[in-house]
Amino acid sequence: MTARSTTGGLDEARAALRQRQGAGARYDAASAPVRELSWARRGTAYFARLLNALSDAGLDAPSAIEDVPRREIVAHVGYHARALSEIVAWARQHPGISMPVAASLEPTAIRRKATQPARALRNLFAHAEIHLNVEWRDLEDSHWGIVVEDEGGQRFAIRETPLMRARTIWLCALELDAGGRHADVPPDLAEQIAQLLPARNGNRLQALNASGAETLPACSGVISL
Figure 1 (cartoon, helix red, strand yellow):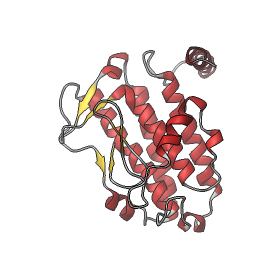
Figure 2 (cartoon, one colour):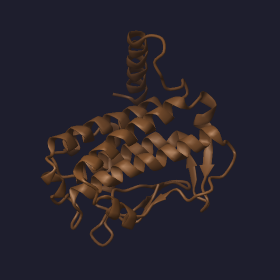
Figure 3 (spheres, one colour):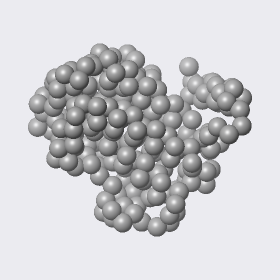
């Protein structure tokens, strides 16, 4: 299936959903990246199913990454969504103005936050995902073309944030080691995920440089969004 036919199918599905939901529902702007948003949202639903199937005790079990418990993967996924929400919200509210803080996730902070009770971790994941979706749907057509620069000089194209999220959520679903399968990853995204999986730095996932100024976020390790 070609990218054009896939996108066309998503457009048709989106139009049908709008018709069912009626007036008052919130939608993505017409210029939003339909395919990448679909990847991110499908990954979120997939990760949620894996997480919901785990007992609280199961969160303390090891992930697929050596010396990293599952609860640390969950914490990363939640705080990654929060960080992206802040970037997207800044682009909408302060276009053309640099963020006054650095947009990054420190591994030591993630490990500390991963010690929260299981219920708090589950709520973090659920609430952060809702917030990120709201921020994406609040973007108007013009916002999708904005590039945000943070305090450290990192630049983030708002149009790339759904792809950044999709890569992270699907990668983390596999690294959670709770039944996730590479075969379930959307085919057009699977090759990118396969390239990310072997990356290690001291037995922890490392951030990988992509084209341009973007640094891809990995599940653990030194992470720049």
